[in-house]
Image (cartoon, rainbow, N blue to C red; front, side):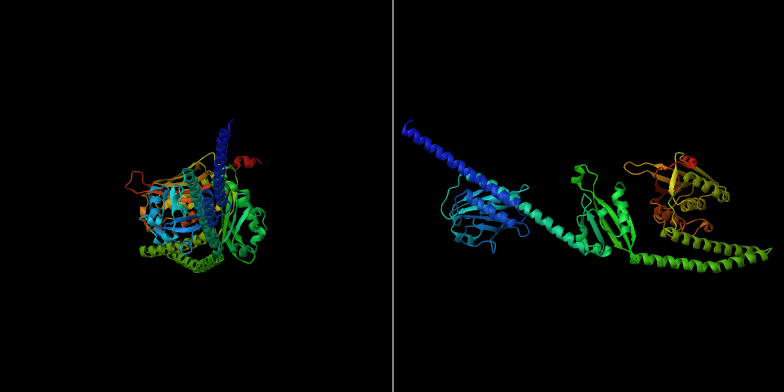
Length: 556
């Protein structure tokens, strides 16, 4: 190999080594920006790491970053390196679409200039005093949009290479992503801070868990309600935390044992006489569902409803006291009317009519008082049983005891009972009363010689537990549409052609309350005489679990 060939080979090796070194430096600069963005949620360190990376890629002395301010429609200088004048303490602002930066925003491509002071597009005359002789402005993107501009500047003439521009574009895009991520983190932290402020300011007690069932939120109200310290239970399993024992038992039942039931209400009396009403709800996480786990986060919210409970007790006591006080004079009045009726062996038509009016009035007053007391009892849950009983037998008893009532208007009553029904868990006495109220209501508002049908069966709905449906259907004239929404209100009675058939106005309210106390609900469908199939259907829907059939129970 000749000396000239050796010299040429050495030159080639040196150029290759320089290029490798240059590319390595560029990669290190890009990695530095990525590392800075990954290790902090603050914007400042990421911006200045990007400026250092720019100055490490190109042999220049100055760099800067401007961001779009959407509130003012301006580009604002937020970071700089190597400039003689300070353009960030009192930020340099450039109206969007103007100046050299406007060309970058319009095209989305880098713009390379010489001395900007001689460029007619210069939008900030104060920048001319910096005496920059060469610069490149590159768009920074995030989620497909330009959010700012990264610039590299020289105070002496300089020519940018194509490789430098490519590397600077990569850095600009990395900075754009880092800025967007920092803004998202800042927004999340701000929202979390506001949420925590609301949670701690509310008067409701709030306890929440993560997907592993460990407590991660306890607000101040919960600490006061249950006399616990958040530090004492934070991070511990909800079902093992040292709560008030009755609360612990309810949480065990509602959340830790019966997860498949979903949300549940918790009522609780505290030793100091306060009464709390709470609601436990699962918080479903899409990420957790993708992992295919049965665990859910939970949030439990309690309210102090002591004042409502006291008001309810006062109201119930007032109604009970008033009802008992009215009963005595009513009994005296009824006895007097009956005595007078016996003495008038041959009353005149007027006397008979007056006596009948008085007896009906007293009877209705007694019925009203009885219904009011019954409604108070069932609403308060006093003595509400939860025992298995023979549902079919109860319905048959309703039908047989209603037969004498039907004879008054030459009506018929028929029952259709699903033969596969087993025992129902509930209060037979109150459910019997509810069904009898529906039958009595149908009797009052159905014409003579009509048929009243009682249907009982199960209804299965996908993804929901089975339901028991009890329906009472009549062939009456139907109920006006404007009255349907008020039928289950206290003391509401639809218009009737015969005022003597009007009850206390509490019968359907009792039906609704009985259904709700058993975890169910009521409904009504009615068609007026203008339609082909007029009549009314009242229904009670109750949760239904198959239990041991009555015949098998008898053999045990």
